[in-house]
Image 1: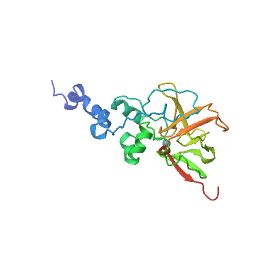
Image 2: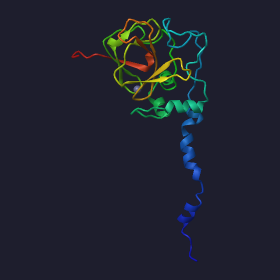
Image 3: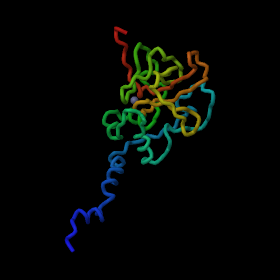
Image 4: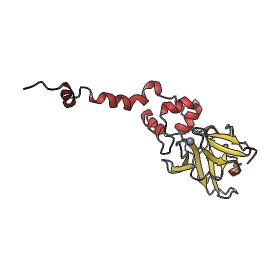
Length: 212
Ligand SMILES: [Zn+2]
């Protein structure tokens, strides 16, 4: 009998078959990569609701579901759009507060956002990926404490029912970044009777150019 080639032995008995796949799978959830998460209860019935919101509840609702960090990482990395980034890539380009809201589906405190009372002619882009989301002409004063728009740009915004079934989340279709929630039938005098209730921090305003 001849000598068996070393590579054949390695193929038959791989010495550390799981090492590569395990390190790749768990790299994003190393302790170093974890993000401080601030859980805050709201006294208002639901974040992004307004006095006109048809349904009301006295339940305290956390800004995002209380799930293990490993599951949160899964939420962080979810995007069906063309902009795909890892958690670490998002952390590198977003501020901690932007990351908390855009990627961990947090909610900024009502009445504190940069664009809550802001009025100017231009376009609101996704603060995460720069995709145009709303025209300023669709912004209206809802008095709810967050910027409100009655309509998004076509195809720019995805809608997903919240797990509790009471609200509909809106996200940037390109990067999956959390924007806020959309409500319908509240009676605001707008063409769509919809209110896109958006965190200011999820947006970046770009003034209209002189030619437009
Ligand atoms: Zn985006």
